[in-house]
Image 1 (spheres, rainbow, N blue to C red):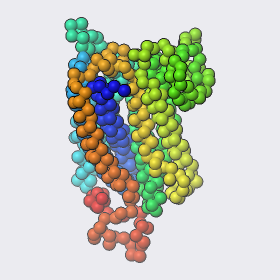
Image 2: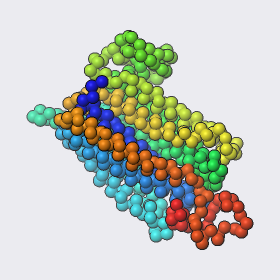
Image 3: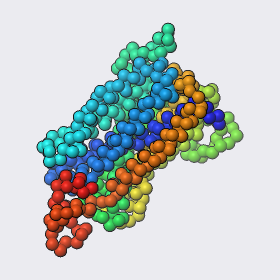
Length: 471
C-alpha cells in the first residue's frame, strides 16, 4: 500500500472522526436520558430519578467537553488536509456547519451552565427547561451535521461556476433536505439513544455484580433495557430504509456492502466472505434469493447491479464496507438481545439478581459505539472514491501537503488522543460504575437511621448539591 499524502489524510480524518463521533453519539442520547429522568422526578417525586440525574449529569459534562474539543480539531482538517474540497464545496457546506454554531451551540451554551450548576439556584421548572433546551440543542446539532454529510452523499440543489469550477447553492431547501437526509437523521438519533442505553445498562449491571443494588440502579437498568427492546426494531427498519435510498443513489456502495459480485435480476445475502481468485475478489456463504424481499421496490425486469458494473477506479474499498456493515448489524442484534433479555428478567423480578445477563451487559456497553463507528465506515468509505458523490473525487479534494507533514500530524494526533481521551474515558467509566451507595462524608451521615447497615439505605437525605459535592 502506498502511504501517500492522500491516504494518510484519509486515515487521519477517519481517526479523528472515529474519536469524535463517540462523544456526540453519547451526549445526544444522554441529554435525552437526563431530561426524562428530571421529568419523571418532577412528575412522581421519586428521589431515585433525581439521583440518576445528578449521577449522570457529571458524565454528560465530561463527554460534552471532550466532544467539543475533538470537534474543533476535526473541523480544522478541512483547511489543513482538505483545502481544495473546502474551496470547491465550501459555499455549500460552510453555511450548513455555520448554522449548527448559530443554533445548536448557542442554545447549548446558554442553558448548559444552568443545567450543571443551577440546583437550588433556580426553580425546578426552569432547571427542567434548561435540561430540555440542552437536549434539543444536541438534536439540532445532529440535524445540521447529518444534513451536510447527506448532501455529500446525495448532492442536489447546487450548480457549478463555469469560471472557477466551485459549487454554489441554487436551492437551499434541496441542499438541506436531500433524499438521504430524513432516514439518515432518524437513524443517527436512534443510534445515539441506543448507544447511551447500552452504556447505562452496562453501568447498572456492573453495580449489580459488585453488590451495589439501589433503587437508582434498578431504575436505570429497567429504563435502559426497555429502550433497547423498543428502539432496536425501529432502528432496523430505519437502517433498511437508508439502504434502499443508497441502493437508488449509490449502487456501488450497496453492491460492496452486500457482496454482490455480478449483476443479476435476483441477488442473495452473503453472510460471510473470504478472499478468492475470481473477478469479485472473494467467495463466501450466501443465502440465495433474498433481494425480492430486501429490495422489493426494484422495478420489474431491472437487474441489481453487482461490482462487475463499476470500473475499479469507481469502486469503494470492498472489505471495509462489507465487514463494516456486518459488524454494525451484529452489534445491533446483540443489543436487541440484551434489551429483550433484560425486559424478560424485569418481568420475572430478577433484573437486580446477579447472573449471566449482567456479565454479558457489561461488555455490551461498547456495542453502541462499535455500531456507530462501523456504520460511519459503511457510509463514508462506501461513498469513495468521491467526497461529493458523483461530482468531486477524493483525490481532487486533498490539500497540496507532503507525505511527511501528514504523517507527522497523524502521529501527534494518535499520541495526544491516546493519552487525553483514554484518561477521560476511564474517568467517566469510574464515575458511571461506582454506584449510588457512596454517601457524602461529614455531618450529613448523621441522618442515617441508627443501626442501619452501610449499604441498606437507598434514598439518602442529602440535597442534589450535596451529592454533586461528594462525587
